Length: 150
Image 1 (tube, rainbow, N blue to C red):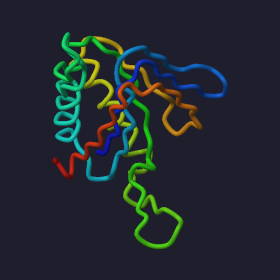
Image 2 (cartoon, one colour):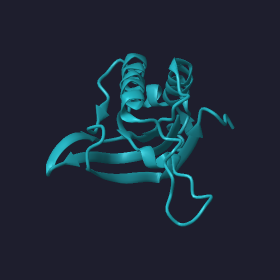
Image 3 (cartoon, helix red, strand yellow):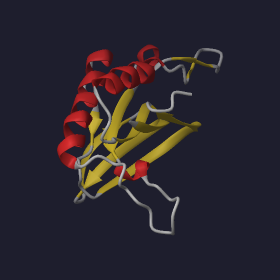
Image 4 (tube, one colour):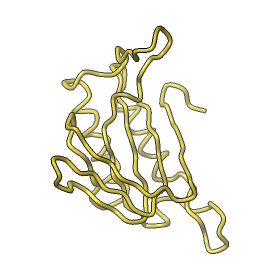
């Protein structure tokens, strides 16, 4: 699994001119799923995200986690995170999981975050043409790949 995590002061997802999800302070998480992803990836990544110390404390230092800041979350599926641009100018998405594999993993990831946070997590609609708006706070943007834990 590969994610792009953006700390936001607000974010929303719209499909067919209808707002599907919206949050104020928290995280917008774009997630790409590949064929080899498993429950182990979901567990490791969801735990890492809720405990990542990227929210400001009282002194303005990034010292608080999502749990401590009581922030909200939107998770949006994005297969293009697994684009390979090695050959030519047209990206290849061969490493991105097909919907029959990706949807159950995506849903389990959202559920894992909800359980750890104790609240609902916003989503988009898997496979839909989504319009994602955000106001990046900081800006703080972090990329995590469960196959390359740096």
